Length: 303
Image 1 (cartoon, rainbow, N blue to C red):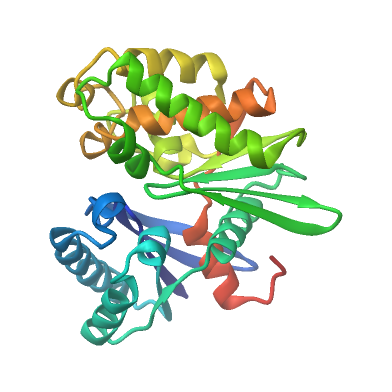
Image 2: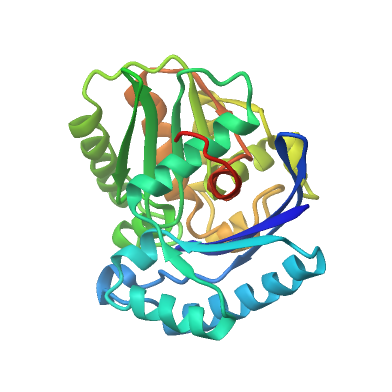
């Protein structure tokens, strides 16, 4: 049996098709289309008009793929852009009417919980880890404490921060310093002295950093899943990207061209998170909110 999940993100729309095998879900197809649904949200408070149309078309294309697999269950959901935009619920209703499937707008807590579930179901070695989910509009931190799942959501998404702080190409030193202080302030105020034995990252920035490190010309999710990235790698990649224009970054091996503009901001979030926790590395997970949403849909697994 096949199942499919569609994630309407701030920067991109993603699809996961998975097959049930015994007690597990095995990914069989992944797709990503950059739509920039949340472009301009920080100034207008509304979703991008072109982003709405691109998102609509991407969802319709993904539904064709899901139905090609005869998916028994298709879940469609939106995250931070739809939560924050004044017209987010209106767009979700319009999309629901168009495709004939409910489009759920996840709360920050549910979003974080599903990401954590996706990680723990796909990486058996992850125990008591801090998971960070870095998207276009927000960054969620999730961990267990006293048998309770704790979640924090920050407006630290790669697209959000790029539009808020970066006006030059490449970014100026002053812009990067202001951005760094902003990130540090958010993490420092909420995390305090929180200890982290193991850090796991999911999201487009994370997988792009991993693909860049492997200089991956043809994207291979299995090679990235479980990969360890060290702080020196992130610092080196960030320093390199900050010397290049977005067009020049788009030519870097492993970096999806559509993500070139927002990668410096995203990489800086990762670098500052490592520094905040005082850890030297993190684990890359392909199991994320898409996989977690499917496990939640078919089971009563506690999240």
